[in-house]
Length: 76
Image (cartoon, rainbow, N blue to C red; front, side, top):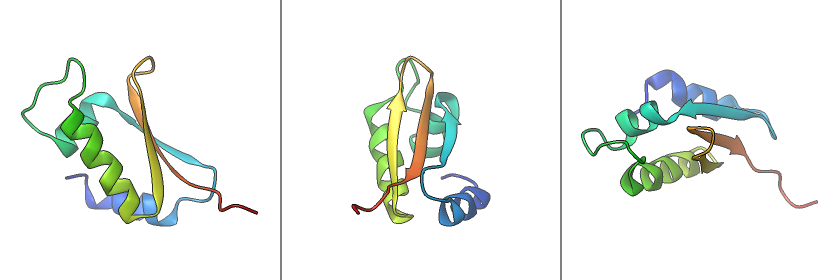
């Protein structure tokens, strides 16, 4: 699991601001021991579920080797 501080980051994350996490940490935090080339689907699914706990979206960018959590903007 991510460090406790990451829970605080996502809880306090302002709208439209992202928290960027390198893929090696995604794998370590969300699916340790599953390998990383490429990042496992288990890690990405778990990261997405983790983000939802804090009302955050999650997207993995393989070309940048990182995942991003951000608060979605409610429809106006």
